[in-house]
Picture 1: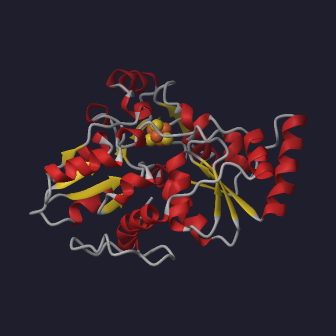
Picture 2: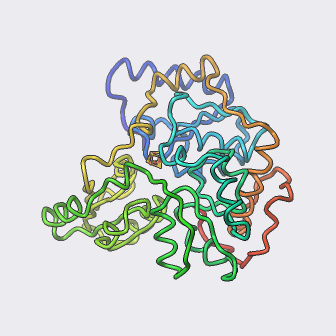
Length: 337
Ligand code: SF4
């Protein structure tokens, strides 16, 4: 159910967006971390890969991606025949910026036998240097699926890689990158929240640091957390250790439960850049069109498809030969988001 617009000006913008959307044959996608008004406006909310899959499947000609740049790029990688718009061009991802293609190539020279596993929170150029992508939901399974005699270079999130290493018992070569929003969640903040709400369960995202994750009752991706809270009894309360935007959807879908953000600092400034006005302008001016050069796109798609093969969903574009997996173990039916 959509929330009512806050005021007359917002109502007018929403009406204009609805008209423009129809004219452009567009669909609006919003990441779970977007502002509540953007989530409520969107046709679909979800995490980056869920949204990219929707983008690939939709018959809409134009995709307005309310998220950050790597997400819009991933949507284009999977459906290059569509026009993908990012309403605010400056909306990047600090975690993705930790790795460049050049740096990954250098690391590959140092570790020539390594399989490169890259979190989808990375640029198209970095994905193009990758054997197989992963999400926060399937990082553990992807790592587990790789032959034990092959070293694994995990790019670019140290904390997610550390978590996957711990769960699988594998010794990964970890990249020195992190999401500052999640990595700054301290054990002190979590302990303080637990003291304040002692009956609440603590649920956290694996981009958080290992010592903070020790205090969690459940660790999972945004989709994993959404499923988990749904499975818990009416009246349960939760301390949520991820970007605060997710609480909007959690509360909307679970009015019988209570949610507290683990820290007031769990706000990603990049994710909060897009406003209703930006979405309207984006559709009006058809800006900012996100594309990826074809050679890079095809190689990046092969790495994304190598991951999607485990979930029974492969993008419509024919894959290149880059990521023919020698490390395949059946993972059908697992969530990729
Ligand atoms: Fe990137 Fe972290 Fe912001 Fe997500 S929350 S877009 S990983 S900086």
